[in-house]
Length: 108
Ligand code: 2BA
Image (cartoon, rainbow, N blue to C red; front, side, top):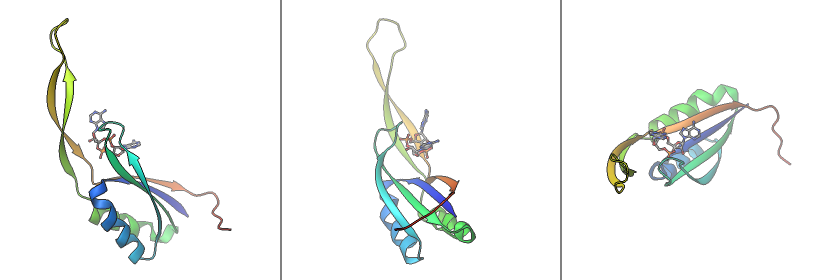
């Protein structure tokens, strides 16, 4: 068995979870925050049998889109001068996925 940890954009999360449930996987959805953008994203925990991992990864890939957002960073180019806000474009991936081997799985 594998544990898939998938970090996705909030905007894709509901459709993705529906699709995952429709296809008879089990999923836990958590509200999380990206460290870089400091804005909300969604982390899904999905326990899956080894023979269905490819099917699951395909569902994630099909339902998550890459998008660009603008983030304003504070920068300074002359020592002693005020901070200048500079907008930068950041590409957020469709999904960041970790696949872990599960040593033991129990339901009581
Ligand atoms: P954030 O940390 O908010 O990052 C959002 C996007 O900002 C990232 O998209 C990446 O394109 C960019 N980014 C992140 N750190 C950066 C940096 N130091 N310099 C320049 N650009 C940077 P993704 O890579 O698609 O990541 C989306 C979200 O997935 C991340 O949100 C974070 O919550 C999670 N994530 C990504 N890689 C991770 C990892 N190795 N471990 C844990 N969480 C991760």
